[in-house]
Length: 266
Image (tube, rainbow, N blue to C red; front, top):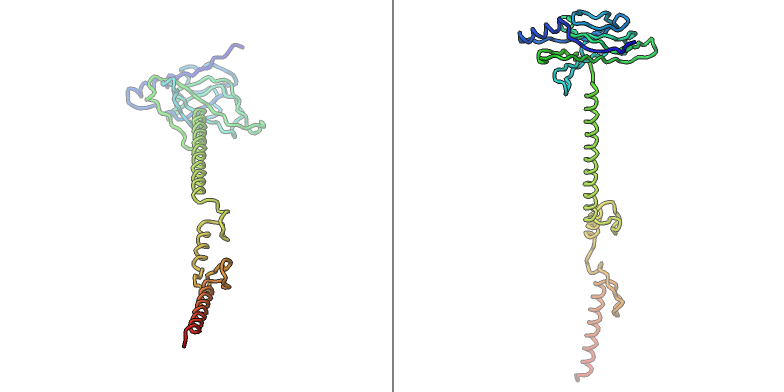
């Protein structure tokens, strides 16, 4: 079996419509992609074709793109859902909004299984055509279809990776700022476990406890303690010491008066 050559060509109808669109200032509106099995074998599509040899599926265009390296390429994509199958794709066609076949393609054999075959998968059909006046061709995309090209998928993955990296960097920076702030605050407050107060849970509670204690201190002479270890007094508070000293002074004065009276003649 000779090596097969695969290609896409504009049909005569397609070339005429695109040429007329250029002269009339209109556009050729591409709307659908068809798939066929070629009647059971490969064949070489020709420009005078108006239909596929044996159409097995037709669906709306799900996405379109332009090739970065080939500005005259138009790339249309459609998806054959997993629920449909049981055929082999060997030919494809690009259909406009008037039902005319604008381009035809000979494609490599691709079997589309169905549920009854024990396997189910979506089949993505990519149709590429080259036109000289791309601006005169419009592709209608099915808005209900959710479709990602490989390029779209790679862009999304890259964006997610960059976002994850940025989030990680922000988290690292934020956590460091929090740790630095905690350390700075801790250095200013000190170790609360060293507080002599009953409540060591926080500085405010400890300060309130100290204030309450200070407010409750009585500074009267009776309540103020006195260290009598270095004196001959028996008192244990300031008021008692004062009273004891006054009593001693009065006793001393009385003794002095009596002594003077005994010495002086009456």
